[in-house]
Image (cartoon, rainbow, N blue to C red; front, side):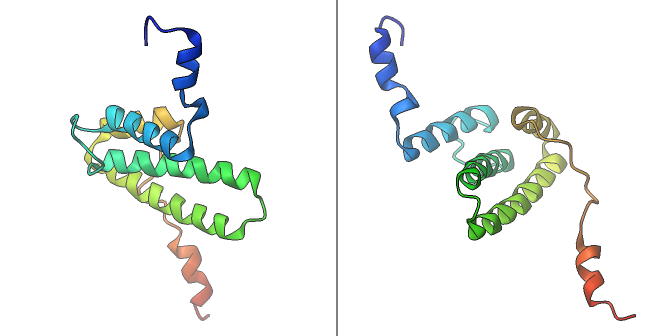
Length: 127
């Protein structure tokens, strides 16, 4: 946007955009960064993981504003599981994209064998 005044740049920025425009712009950025090619529209595992990470950020911001929203916490826990599974798949298939996702979203490396099913099943054991 070279050659335009600061007022025009400010008016066309996303500061005045609605939620759908901001979400569309974030997805375009993720497509450019994590997509395999320029026509990639969300079919690659890295792009799906990036979309889930963006959705989690939005849900976490919502939960900061509305801490009594119990169904929001349930949805956030569901998204956490989806993100974990998507990141594990990207780690197995495209390790360089996985490292890029971790650095971009400032996440920690996750272990493959870190499942909590033994804690859930302990309730149903009869001793």
